Length: 208
Image (cartoon, rainbow, N blue to C red):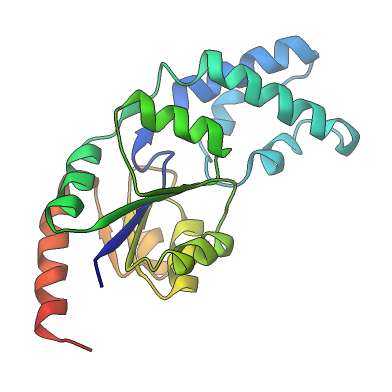
């Protein structure tokens, strides 16, 4: 069986904070609603509707979710930047003969725009998933490893029986990721190729 590694998107592969902040600011101006966009981008990870529910009543959520996703295309795709080591981490999986997944809470069409924007080809992309529901997709695709910055990513990996690799580039530090059950914690993805080489060496030495 080929190695299969899943990655989260926001604050794992990409720093999407500037564009997300800009999108929330435009949405707030359009709708006449006060939104603390700095607070929003400090806690990326949970589903969009959960965040918007902090600022809008339930009867408005469907409309503002749809409008946010429209605004996102204009305001958030261009400003996103690769986090240190992201493309090299994916290349390390490819070099090991592995498959690459991106499993994200982001709406899938906009996640695809992000991947296309940085020229990142993946074997599968699944959006609109969070925490344990990420685990369902990881299990369906036979993921051996899942890499993410959020405690929810650790939970998703563990739910799938995958090795949980936390990366401390998002809202949680290394100690918090480890306490949540991460099997390994990296400062950023520049450390991932060496970790993967060690992981594959260990697993090769202990078949089954």
